[in-house]
Length: 120
Length: 120
DNA sequence: ATAATGCGTAACTATACGGTTACACGAAAT
DNA sequence: ATTTCGTGTAACCGTATAGTTACGCATTAT
Image (cartoon, rainbow over all chains, first blue to last red; front, side, top):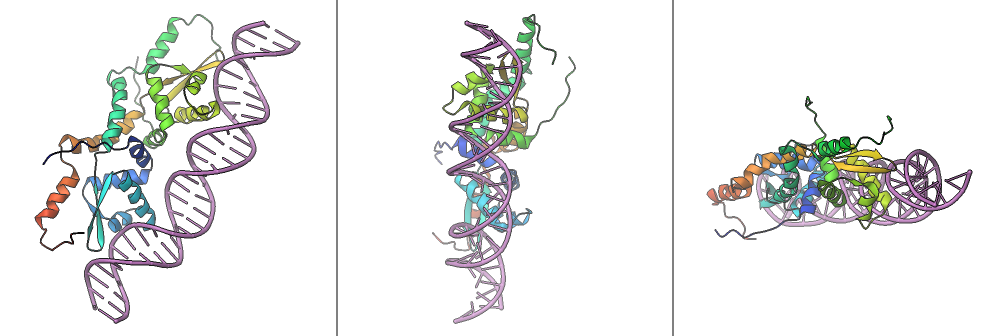
């Protein structure tokens, strides 16, 4: 099977992940596919609300839908999360080096800390 | 220097990252500290708008502010991004194994594909 | 002392968001 | 044929969000 290179919207992914319910839905699908109703039943909000979250996740390509009779199975598509991961990549180096820019900045400041700052 | 273990809000981090301008601000600070005004000047929106984004980033602890005279230097604090990273961790295994649950699902479906599905 | 600079906040506005109830519709059951 | 089930969408509502302009207040310059 020939694998075709596809890119997803980083914007859509970050936006989708901003909502805790949507992240929870993804966490649920991480363990396996579920029909829409079953997903809805695990949350304290109404079914239509979940349906809309699913639509948004669908449009961000984070989940895919597969119809089977009258139910619709949702399953995870982790691919767009690569966009989030690649963005994070630039920041991982900071904590991996155990040196935040904060620390660097503070140290730099300390170097010429002779101008007598306010103690406030 | 004794390092104290601190945890940040995953919720706040994800929420802060949902806005493209805020991500761009972080990307800018990744290269070094900048005063508020200088940050604002690099964006097409007004200075107060940036000021509010900075406040939100500050409250999410993604940036820190340091006053120097009449300017305020902002610098990156990448720590809270660890929360995002740790959430992503669960998903990385999917694409690292080059096996999405989609693929698994499709294969599982294929196994008992005898119930004559609609070709639609 | 007065003016200019740098920056945050208040007030306001339009739009986006997330939730709810009512409804539509195909698939399965009776 | 009719009812029930599973699920999506429409309409509506209150709150959050992101932008703008006006303003306030230190700090630095004149």
